[in-house]
Length: 164
Image (tube, rainbow, N blue to C red; front, side):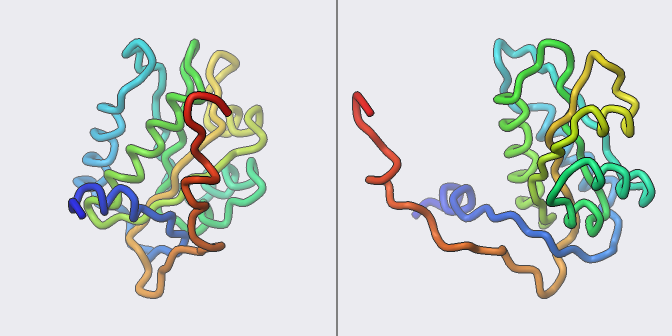
């Protein structure tokens, strides 16, 4: 199997991190990969808020229902949809953040922020921007392992040819 293909299909969310801050070099590399993510009509209608302050992380964590990784991670990248942005592009950029992070030894986990109005207030986004998703980042704890609820469904349960 091709190494790059194996890397992509092997990506897993990790939720256990060391307390070590993300180095500036690693954070910049991750954000650069995010910047180069493809987007609808190449409009790049996103921006990022990197949250490292413990109090701000706590407030961001309160904006979602399953946010223990936010509280545990040294850094959180909040994905901001600029005016005209869309959730599809937010998902694309989140996946690029995760892939880039894994490529340089940084663990990550995607997070849904269920209370978008609250997170907009916490991050100072105003009414014209929104944030529903974030990615936690941290160097993996020695005991870190993916929380697996099983493998993947077989292709024949997922793929339909020509019609559903």
